[in-house]
Length: 163
Image 1 (cartoon, rainbow, N blue to C red):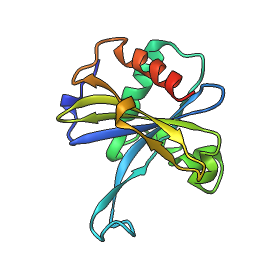
Image 2 (cartoon, rainbow, N blue to C red):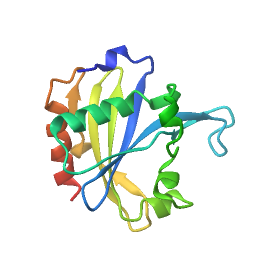
Image 3 (tube, rainbow, N blue to C red):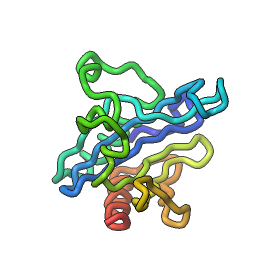
């Protein structure tokens, strides 16, 4: 399997939104510099495209390949011509005008890779005001390299946590 050690950034993150039918919507993150409210030249994480959906039922291999392929898209890696035609944000993908509307019925976990800590999965809980909150206690650490099947098993654990 691919490893984070080949990645040129300090971290990468994929937001994984879960539909009621268990389809997974995979959204790579990028960096937006000078975004209002983030200190002028400072940057913030933003959803970038392409957004992909993994349809249920899926195999362990489907889960792992989709997550790792999406992670490769983080921070503006050059998309293919086919990917350029896909929606570039969750709201675009869902056909609505706002992130809040797009996430109304979705659950969330994040798939992360940090240069120093390796891979992890972080489940989130939907709050009444419409945003998500997570706790470090429920984060699943996977280490620096992923053995085949390890990521998929952890994803299935996270899906049970956020039910």
